[in-house]
Image (cartoon, rainbow, N blue to C red; front, side, top):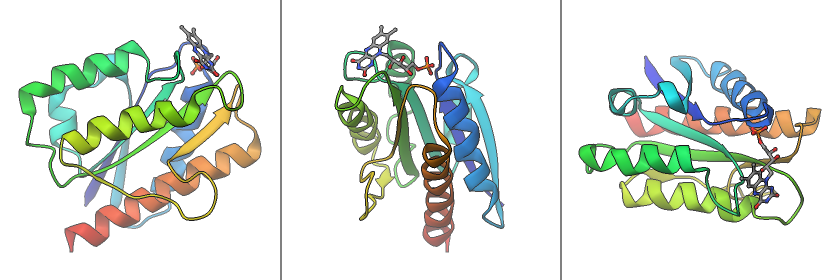
Length: 159
Ligand SMILES: Cc1cc2nc3c(=O)[nH]c(=O)nc-3n(C[C@H](O)[C@H](O)[C@H](O)COP(=O)(O)O)c2cc1C
């Protein structure tokens, strides 16, 4: 079985709701198991043991929240070992055009530095899943799609 790990930080619950919707999407794909962890509980071993890593953060000043950045900074200890794993990102922001895209890019950028593989999306939400405030039903669908696509790419790469 391939494994997808979802790591998120959430202070007021919006990113957390998105994380569970992303997990629902992963569960739609056969032969892939999913683990969802708050960033405070995620270890470097968790990252090493996953084939795909999806990270969610609230938009904080147009970037990933400090606790997510701390995990990346810690991950220098395993630098090179995440190479070839699939990565994806999602964020909850307070407003529209208020830094959600730059937040996702800040996460994907760190993943690329690790040598991870990131897939874009051709139609709408090109960089990852985003929602403003409390995620609506359509936002949850976009999250599910992110989980499903990431899991499918993991399987393709493992073949
Ligand atoms: C320190 C801090 C910085 C923030 N910066 C931004 C920002 O730059 N742009 C934005 O749209 N929202 C910003 N917000 C709002 C959060 O992104 C938003 O409330 C989000 O839904 C919180 O997610 P959570 O419920 O998972 O904690 C900020 C909130 C905090 C606490």
